[in-house]
Length: 487
Image (tube, rainbow, N blue to C red):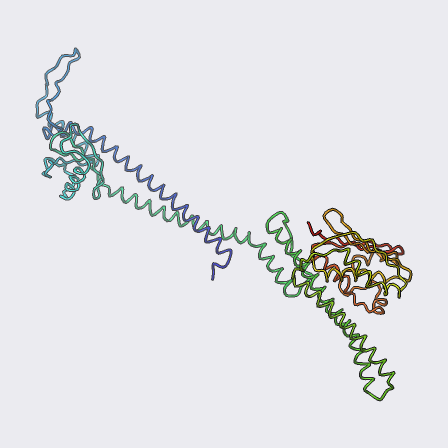
């Protein structure tokens, strides 16, 4: 779907936000403009009502309510007699009403039964207009107000000021709203077009900005696709490491680097495993085929079988080591049994006493209690591997010291020898699988280069650390730290 694209999602949100904002602002502007124009029209109607009511009362006597006409007042404060005749006052009143009509305002006087008492020449003739006015009046005014009341209403195509003087009459001052409605319609149309233009331009700008913002993602995706296609040496360009995308690129580069390193290790591991297994298999096939090719003496058969046995044992050791590493790689946590590194070290020293004697090595044990929780069998093999390496990979007369104890919150195991040591360039590689510092010696002793890899993986699976220090000609020290049983 189209909205699975981030760019289209951003554009959709941008469109919705722009449309909502433009709608609210333009509707508010339209309503403000409409109210302003209506207020302007209402003000004009009130002004014409103020000017025309006195004149209208002369033309339609009593329309302003039952009251006595106020006598003229002289400057000395005494009442003065009127000098103009009723005809003259009527003529003046009609002239005033003509001026009112000339402004576009119409006026009409009706009684509460709807009978017309006076109507200007420009007043509408629709009977329903009077009916609507009377309905509005009944809904919002009293029947017989004590004081004049005004009510501004919008009737069909007219804006009307309903003036209710005391009595039974209703005076309407109105103005057609056709021009106003047309102007408001044009305004609404213009604002609608403006709104569409704003949204269209805003979406265009949003599309461009979204494209510029997402361009680094497209570049990262292209680089990642290249790496996935096999260009493992390729890296994602990092322009702005402080931005979110820059940090993402850094993380991806680091991830791909680790994946490439893991791939290289797997490739090397596969090659090394094949090589290690191929050697004993070649021996087995060669000796078995040689034994079957022609008759041999019992002693020759025994020798061939012994060689085949040793090769099979070598293959078994390799397969057992690979199986243990594979199980550990699977992430299964070790068991949490109560055990003590001192007891495990004591057992290992006892088991290897004869091997040490055969190779002229001296075993020294300095064991203090070091309780831990873990898989006693796997931890025991850790001690065995370290001590066996120290015995087999050194010259005759080497002294191997095994020490256990507590240091703070950690149980510690240390295996130290005073043998030949390990060079600095090989020290960081000894825990790699199938890694041999001296391949010739390792093959002679039957080692496949998996022992220290298993040791490191077992220690880390138990939440511990292993460190090694060595100097050529002075010896090597392996130190393991594991959380104590009470930690």
